[in-house]
Length: 80
Image 1 (cartoon, one colour):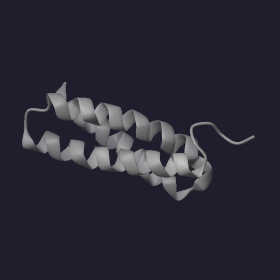
Image 2 (cartoon, rainbow, N blue to C red; image 1 turned 45 degrees about the vertical axis):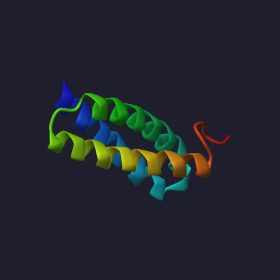
Image 3 (cartoon, rainbow, N blue to C red; image 1 turned 135 degrees about the vertical axis):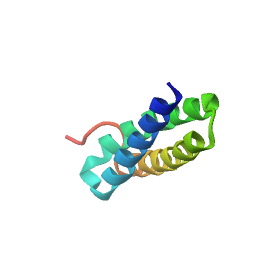
């Protein structure tokens, strides 16, 4: 369970961070960043090994940057 949570946090962080390169993808950045941040925090709480914690930190940072830039570019909902 801990390994899958760490990989999920990393995947959400990568998606959130990469989608910040396109301003029109701000809903993806916002949602995946928020989801990845929550999953990463819980995964860090239950992690048992150093590699899991390393993946969690990378995922948390990517998720935070993705969520912050996604919210700055327009937030959680697409523009009409």
